[in-house]
Image 1 (cartoon, rainbow, N blue to C red):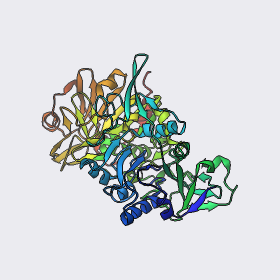
Image 2 (image 1 turned 180 degrees about the vertical axis):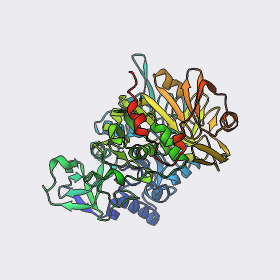
Image 3 (image 1 turned 60 degrees about the vertical axis):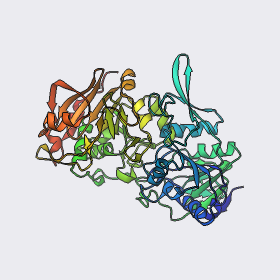
Image 4 (image 1 turned 60 degrees about the horizontal axis):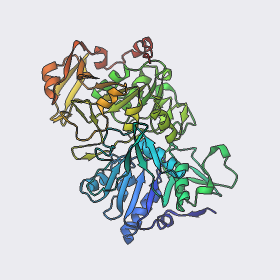
Length: 524
């Protein structure tokens, strides 16, 4: 029988050396924060438990003080395996200092691996991550020198290469829902994200471990409709009730995020007119009617707001990897949620669709680009972001568009009056002879038949067999001084070099719907 306990009692159930699997996504979406806080408080008070292996599918935290940041105490964790550390920079710092065994694996891989672990399989067999830093021939997902164990094997089947991401036993799974009935059945009606809670609970159950669920409220036994239950009480051991739990770290509760209401289009606010909007607008020009699209975190996330502002977001299917299909994905620190969506899928199902080639277009950010078209978002300078869903998305899409500013570090660039003015260029070069870590392999992408674009604040590039080719520049930009001289390798200049549409660089809407509706789906 399920037991109802408080968060402190839940923290006492975690033993030294345990492997603890946490549910939730990014900026507080279905994150069991009360239990995380109690676990950190116990460690600070008693020094126990220590030497934990902490696992999360998505990086958890508000980029400062919540989520896994709270658990980044020396000695508490021996190993951390996550889709990333971007939301939890305190663990990134411990990884840099080699105070933890740090691994960052693809979000989609970890999501689907939960399902394989629940089924007792040896691991997840996939092509996702080949020829990136996931590949054992590179670094096998490691982010610190002390991370010695091989979590990924290279396997050849019928002459074709695959990666096997190995299963591991789970001692404790900690998940979150909205309502628990007296038998421990869990529903998630107010959550902005479903995740893989059933698989997490079943994985712990398989190994004789325990599952702890944090919820907002309790209902009498039999009160929850069976079609609304996301995790059955048969695999839930303990329930913690936290009436004040927030939908995300930023948002207390949005009925639109929960799918209870659809908001009027006019309530979807335009993003500010700045260089990020310029990049998002140029990206939106790649959309076509009926396209199935992923919008990654960062500058690309603004494309949903552009499509809404221009009046055609209902004529394509925007998605985010956390499971939102259709509607308008949320931007900023609520990214991963969405409004007016057609469906909120369990996260593993979304990644099944992505890996199977379901995306027509993927819009992703870049931190570094090199002469081979490789992209790095996972580790650069003093940042360990990890891949998040980037690798699954980038390798699975038919066409992938990487976006970002050409330089960084003090960049002061202003759009207006139909052109672009660079008042001060960035001191940090982002286009380098070789990236620091390969999160996307440009040559491999071409071999797989992908179309690959790179959209920057001032120019648009395409990956070709001969290398990167600049095809468009912004009005007001000098090709040599502002573009070619800011790249650390030679690029091809197109014989048909074009100037980007001046409407991109004006504050008023572009009237992009006409351009959008005139486009057709590319031939297969």
